Length: 107
Picture (cartoon, rainbow, N blue to C red):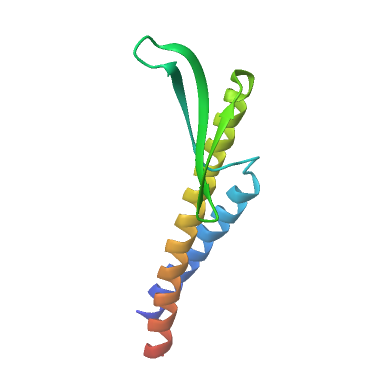
């Protein structure tokens, strides 16, 4: 039983290492969501892009010029990737910690 738990800890460590490597490849990022708005919504006249995000517990809204929409969209996607990877890392770290404590008690 202890051998199986050690194998599981090793598997968790391996998954964590893969996540760390993936994090090294995360490019420029920024939080938020990008939406297309209209100055006159009923007639869909005067389109503009708006970036909304929260940073340090404060909400922010920024206008984005059309030529930067693609770049900002990519940065938002990179941020989502970063958040997903770190969330997975924390989940694995919690599982590893619990398993290590259980193993220490049983030894």
